[in-house]
Image (tube, rainbow, N blue to C red):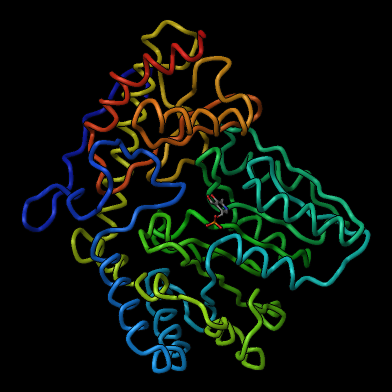
Length: 407
Ligand SMILES: Cc1ncc(COP(=O)(O)O)c(C=O)c1O
């Protein structure tokens, strides 16, 4: 939108009994929760399911653990159905980082061949690529994708760094700091044509994209269910359909070692997997209450509204910031960027410090990010958020953040 204009606010979602959606969560009502994207938030019903599973485990551990791989396989099937992919291609891992680590560990050394990442890559995943490159005695190239690049421009920016020396591409499907899509499908087609291994980091994709693996050609994909899927933490999927499957082993090498992918990931030693087993409860809760398509539509409309309200508030403070949400070229449902006043969030460390300060001083859980030396507020919207959350931030927090910039 245009020079501080604000679209109509969507009507808040309610539960079947008419209570606000937030009543299904246990989030602290004294705080504003505007950062679902970082760590998710688990609805009460899924917490209760996990608690019940834990109680069952504690009642009879010897009955619990031998039966666990079978229950993991059933969970895998439910997660795969949600992602609209085949459970025979999907392994459960504790988080996206674990999935990425599994892939990095599986790749045989390719000395002299480079790894390609982008400047939007998730820091920890990129650091892993750098360590992998150091082990291989090779280098990491970084494709620079302008923040506002559309699909074609982003694709060309990635392609500009590719030649016969690139052996591995690590590409986000949805970026973290910049809340945008990357042209993973198109890059996948070209990577396959050139015989380059492609790892797609879809950490944010489950819940935000209806079918994140549809039409995606890649060697491996990771996605967190504990972000937008609202599953208890420790629930992520690692999907592999090609020959790399044979080399993928869980980080915790256990009794499943001799089994094929993905079955061997159902065995991870003596581990509390109750969060993972409760994941389908969270996915089903949203599906049964609103349907995921409706939920996504609401999240998207609310993110639009919230970002417009907050950007307009920053715009009114008189500092040279953008009165409109940031154009990220390929936006995702549920997350938006707003430019921070000049001087704030100019590095990741500075942005993290703002997050901590907002938590402590504003009673707001918010994500502050940094890209290319500029600071952003990354707003999330999930089903439990309402327009009032962003209006509150605009009226109460923006003037304080503005003061931080001037201090
Ligand atoms: C793009 C991306 N990749 C990877 C991760 C890591 O996820 P986890 O901490 O669950 O391993 C995140 C987390 O925010 C992310 O946004």
